[in-house]
Structures are given as structure tokens and as C-alpha cells.
Amino acid sequence: MKKAVTLMEVNLAIMIMAGGILSVLGLYSLGYRENRQSREDVASAAYADAVMSPLVMALSATNVTWSAFRSITSQPSERGWYEYLNAQTGMVNGDPEGKAKAVFSSVMGKLGSTGVASGWPTTASGGLKAGLVVLHDEDSAVVRIAFRATKNPAELLAMPIYYTEVRFQGVQNQ
Image 1 (tube, rainbow, N blue to C red):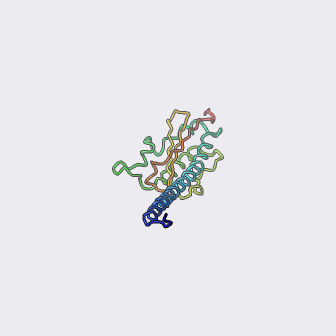
Image 2: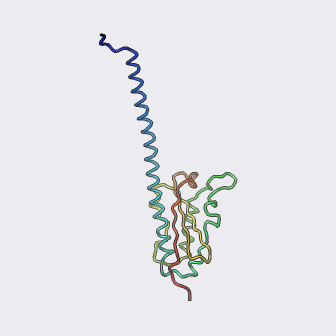
């Protein structure tokens, strides 16, 4: 009976170990990518909360008049998210965050003094670029707000949507 290990057995053991090590390395890169995506998702949710909360508070304030609420128009336009898209290239137009800030400022400006801070929450961005859509029919008592954020503006329309609706709770004009 021989007590030595053949070269064939050693090669087979090395191949099995190499397969295991490569599998672990593959899982490491997958885990890294999922961790990065998870961090971006959490940052996006926090950013959505920081942008949408002042809008919701201002829109649902009890001192908002019906005429001020009615003056809110769909923005950036009736086209909603398509307004961020270039029709020829199919890519996101320039700076989506500039458009989102304009939408935010316009809505907050039309509501007047509601006691809510009306500035864009820049400290919550975490390096993300945002898109914001406000949809409102003139005679409707509901305003719909949608928000997306991503590190790469070209991927904006592929990101999850944070959405809420606000019902008029203010005072009727006399």
C-alpha cells in the first residue's frame, strides 16, 4: 500500500480550491455592488423625505387658501417625467436637479407664507441628483408629488419613484 500523494490528486485539489476561491471573489464583488446600491437607495429615500416633507406640510397647511392651492400647476409641465427626457436622444436633459429646484421654488412661492421653510434642502442630497414632478389639475383638491434621485443623472428615469398625494385642507376664499 502506497502512502504518497500523486501529482494528479494534488492538481485536482488545487483546482477545487481555485474554484472555491474564485466563487468567494465573485460573491465579494456582488456584495460590494449590492452594498453600494443599498447605500444609494437609503440616501435617495432620505433625500426624497427632505424634499417632499416641506412640500406636503406647505400644501396641507390649514392657512392655505383655495385660490392659492388652485394656482399650483403641473410642473415641470403636463408631460411629467417626460419633461426630463430629450426626445431625440432618449437621454436625460442636462441638469435635472436645476429643473427640480425650479419646480420646488415655484410651488412654495405660490403658497405664500405657510410657516414652512421654503428652501431646497441641499444638505440632504448626499451627492445625488434629483428630479421632481408636481401634478395638479386646476380644479382638483389633490396635488400629486413624485421624486427620484440618483448619483448618475443619465439613470434618473430608471430609479424608484417616491410618490405622495396631498389633499386640500385649507380655507375657502370668501
